[in-house]
Length: 251
Image (cartoon, rainbow, N blue to C red):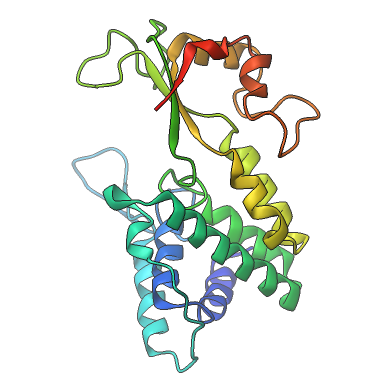
C-alpha cells in the first residue's frame, strides 16, 4: 500500500479511538526506518555518511494535529495508557490495551473488509521492541547459573556493565508466534475468545546464554515445536531444544 493512501486511511480509523489510544498507536508505528510512516523522512548531516532517520515523527505529529481538530466523537476507554510503556509499565494494563486495540481492529476490518490496510496497520504496530505487541511478556523465570557463550547482541558471563551477565532475555513463546496468532484472531473476528488464551503462558525468561544457543541450533529461535498450540506446555520449546527445566527458577 502506498504511504499516502495508508496515512489517509489511518486518519479515518484513528478517529474512532480515544486520544490516549491514538497517541499510543502512532508511537508504536514511528520507531523503525522500515515503518511505512518513516520513508522519505530523513535529515541529512554533512558530517555523517548516513542520513539520520526521523522515525516517522513528521507524519505522526501531522496526524495528531488533524485528529485534535476532528469533529468525530471518539470511543472512550478506561485504559491507563501512561503505564503501558517505559519504567512505569504495567503488564496487566499493557495486555488490556493491546486487547482493546485488537478488538477494535477486528471490528473495523469486519466493517471495511479492507484487508490490505489492516495487514499494513497490524504489521506497523509490531515494528519496534517497545510496541504493545512486544511488551506483553513479563520476566517470570531465570536460569540458576549464567552461561559463557558470547553471541552477537547477547550478554555473556564476561560482559561488563550489566547486572545480568551470561543471561539473555528470551520469550518462551517467540513474539512472532504470538503476533501471528493475534493477527489471525483479528481476521477471524475471534479476538475476544482467543486473546486471553494467547496471553496465558506468554512470559520471558532470563536464560543462560549457552541454553539460548541450544534453541538457535535446534531451529527454534522464532518457532514452536511442530503441532504445538496455545494451552499446551509453555516450556515445550525449551524441552525440544534440550534445556533442563530444573535449571530454571521462578523470579
